[in-house]
Length: 422
Image 1 (cartoon, rainbow, N blue to C red):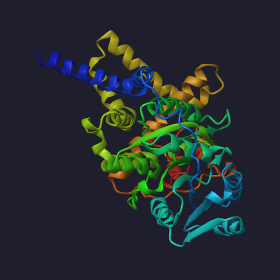
Image 2: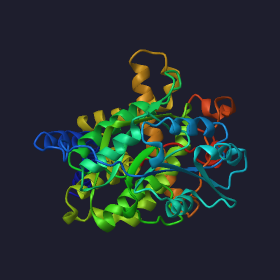
Image 3: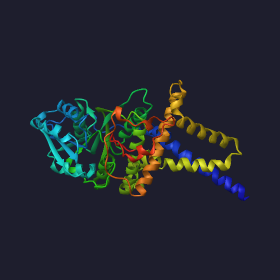
Image 4: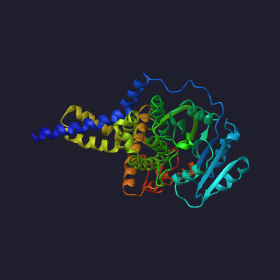
């Protein structure tokens, strides 16, 4: 009888673990799609503002000398009245030529606020927001490039959606086909979910590349904050309500990490920030928060605990290998792990190569969450970032056949790219 009870418990744990993962990654988007078919987006027929508001574009930079000049030129080409734009760039203790380059654009209205001490992006953003004069704030990254209409589209969306306290633009991630990094593919999947959530005003957080909000709604970030782009809109929502909408017409692009090692470091940083953010925003999971609670649990929290669900499901499955269904389930898990770990070997094989790359990305995502949680729990996660390596500077360990980075990569710190939470 005891053996039967153990098997029953193991079956419940196995099915529950993988069932929750299936719901988070598959069933939840389908549910959103069905619900969205019954609803209509808010404010889509409202006219443009009669008078466009003043906009503050804010960017925090650390050692961005390779890209900062092109980024500024990109911002100066925006299709928005130049007399209604101010561009503030904060240097978080840069040690290269970033400040010198930004200063060279002072005559064109670019304001540099240089901080000699490196304190982290959250502290820089707090200070830049205090200095901003625009009614609307647009936050972005140094390695992001806007379409000319991007800011106008963000402002128009805020005008058309009175209940919105933030709007998020569409970011395209570009990488070479041979890099082996499927961040762009995963990002397209995430973008689809944002579109579905936006119909309900239930977009979660933002991505640091392109989003906007009314300055009066801003709540200063804790200086220890790691994933500022997720926290800023969520803290607004926690303290003053409101909705977040996704605006596909506000377009931007950036280059995703070319090497899996760089992507893994980014996921470790985001993983640490995810659990930190959960401690500060857990009240949004309370049932009376409505749709935001469901979206937060389904889209974020269940995925954040994905590594533990995978481990629990795998361990419980070991007790059930005498049953054909659970044998098949176990074989599927082993196949996933083998494909992911050997993805580099299968890269050029049709169909199998794509499946292996997808499996590897899924493993990198969850391994990053697992290690990020460990770093946060041990108190060694820091609110700093480092610029991603140039192509020629990438270390050889990122090219290991297994596709996972060496310890030297893990210790070198995360790359600064879009920080949308996993």
